Image (cartoon, rainbow, N blue to C red; front, side, top):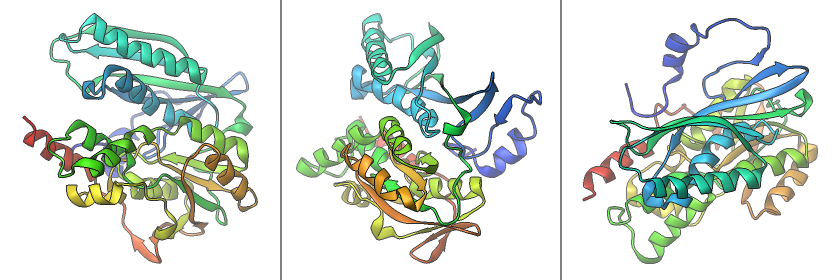
Length: 336
C-alpha cells in the first residue's frame, strides 16, 4: 500500500461496505475526502472528526502540541460550527519524559482554552514500539444547529470559489523546519520557507468565513494538497470546479522551496489552506473577514454544473498520492 491517505478506490472497496450498524441518527457518515460526520442528537447537530496525533519533537514541545491539536480541530472547524469538545488518546514512546509530555500537554491545553474547546476524555500511556511522530489519535466535536452546519457536499453551481494561503504551505514549512541541513536552501530563503509553518492552521479562519456570509462548503487542503482538495470538493457535491491559477495565493518562499525540493506544490499537503465555496452575494464580506485576520485569500474560480476540476481551462486529474511524502522520505534518509 502507498504511503499516506488511502485512495478513493480502496475506501470504496474495503471500508464503505463495512460501516457497522445502520442507525437513523447518523446524518452524514464516512465518505472519502470528507472531513467530518454528523450525528442527530436531540434535535442538535453533533459534528465529529477523528485524526491521528502527530507529534514532531524537532518543532519544540509547545509548538508541536499546538500543531498537533490544530490539525485535529480543523476537520470539525470546516463545518462552520466552532469546535467544542476533544477526546484524545496518546500512545507515547517510552523515551518521552514526564517533563516533555508536560510541555506538550500545556500547549494543547492552552490552545483548547483559547478556542473554547473542552477536553472530555482520553487515554495516556507509554508503549514499547510506539514512536514519533504518530503517537495516538483524537476526536474533535462541535455541537450546533443543523442550519448552521456548512455541509461537505454543499457547493452549488454559481458559487464563487475562494482559496486561502495557497499551495504547499504546510509541506514547505514542515520540511524546511525538520530538515534545515538537508533542504537545498540557506539564509533568508530557508527562513522564509520555515515561516510558512506558522500558517498551517485554519480553525480561526474557518470560523471567520462562516460567520461572514453564506458559505456553502469548506475543505482543509491536507494530503493530496490543493488539487486533491479541489477534487474532493467537486466529488462530494457532484459539481465541477473552474480555477484560475493566477488568482490562487502563493505565499513567500513556497515556489522557490518546491523547486529546490523537486516537489509539485499543488499536490503537496497544505493543512491551513482553506477551499471555500460561497454565495457570490457574500463573497466580498467573506474576503473582508479573512483579510481582517491577515489571511491571504483569492477569488480563485467558480462552481459549475458538471464534474471534475479545470485549471486555466484544462481538465486536471485527481492526484494519486501526496507529493510531499517521497520528499520527506528522501530528506529523512539524507539526515544524519
